[in-house]
Image 1: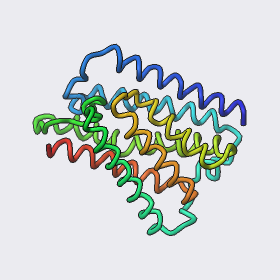
Image 2 (image 1 turned 90 degrees about the horizontal axis):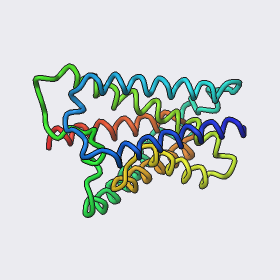
Image 3 (image 1 turned 45 degrees about the horizontal axis):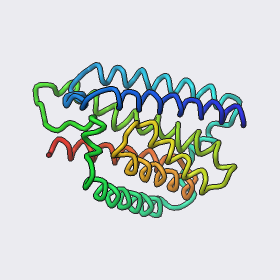
Length: 216
């Protein structure tokens, strides 16, 4: 597993470097990224590249087992309960962080207004954020990442995956919120032994963020 872990770690380092370089070199992000076709197209390209790399890293493995493509070993009701606790933890940390910065505006992905004249590109953006991103990112972190790091212990895997998840987002003020969410998703993965609840929670979280952003 050593070369696989090295490959996954290299991917995380590269993504984190690019994310923070972009964050530190630019001013405030534009407020209309959700209404640009280029955002969705670039997002698809990025996630396709990540999927390709993950495919190479998992060559020779039983992907169904390694990536936890199976029903939760616990009940769906218990999985939902864990997911609710994760969201509560994220809301609490987010409330604290909001006193010092604005993570949503820092990331610049959630629209701050509704533009009815650009429904089509917004639908494309929503598809990327609510469907594509949760699937690919869960495969990258709670799938491959957790699978490779679990040999060091569940606690270490949960913390390291959460840290890596936060780093690739390239946020400063929002780092604690994303880290807690990433750790919570990894904890959900460890308790259910399935990646499906993680994908559903991630998708729900992103969808909620979009709805709140538009409503605000």
